[in-house]
Amino acid sequence: MLHLRLITPAEKTDSAVRLLETTVGCTHLVVVPGAARNPAGDVVMCDVAREAADELIGGLQELGLDTTGSIAVESIDLSLSKRAEKAQKEAPGEGADAVVWEQLSDLTHEESTLSVTYVAFLSVATMLAACGVMLDNAVLIVGAMAVGPEFGPLAGICTALVQRTPKLVWRSLWALLAGFAAAMLLTAGFGWLMDAFGLFEKDMIEAARPNTAFIWQPDMMSFVVAFLAGIVGTLSLTSAKSGALIGVAISVTTVPAAANAAMAFSYSDYSQTWGSAAQLLANLGGIVAAGTLTLLAQKLLWRRP
Image 1 (tube, rainbow, N blue to C red):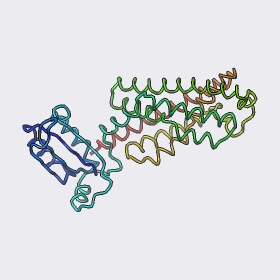
Image 2 (image 1 turned 30 degrees about the horizontal axis):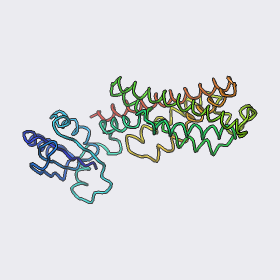
Image 3 (image 1 turned 90 degrees about the vertical axis):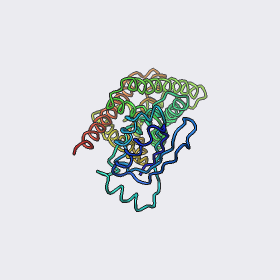
Image 4 (image 1 turned 30 degrees about the vertical axis):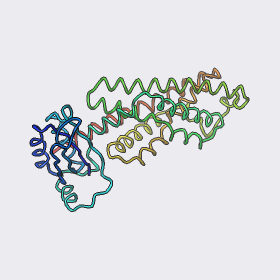
């Protein structure tokens, strides 16, 4: 269930309440006249089944409440109510299959912002992966995968493509490319510093490295794994199952590939640099392709009568 809190101008309250009352899956309706001060208006609250929320939010936007008032949506972790159970049963479809597009757009917009925190997370993850690459330590590689925040911009690109918002595509793409460029540059500097302290040396990058050599040796399986991870990652966002998203993070070698490219470049090993870059592009492309197709499939299947 989702909880909606609306601020409606007095002249639009009746229309909003009528929409809520006629929406299948909506319950626990509360109207507090004149309670809102900024903006001034009435406060209307209700609970709605997740599978009915997207259509309801669209109707409220058609009333202009997103510009003249407010539409706030939050998830309900626990609801002990027979009426809520009845509303969920009456709503068409299953809540786990429903996509609340406005919620998804807002989430991916926030996660695909090129911020200092985002670059810091990505840079530290890439440096951690660099340590794993140089030491041929798979544990450090997995840790770096889990820390990396790059799935946010990737999901933003997928959502923007499906929603046909080119501006948001470029915003997410900029966050992705600029973030990786900054992280790789900082990681190369980190590698030079570690080399100066005698902790890294060229022999490490040129060694056989049986545990991590796959990072710069891409093949068709690299794309296949990334494609499957993109499907699971997108489903985890639309169904709010964050545990699955963690599984995606540790299955795709985006951050390790960037780290290996940076370290190989700093030691003038250009064959590994290009191999790592190819691995990175294969993974990014696979995730975007899978995520976009998954969202399109969800949109098509949900609209099917």
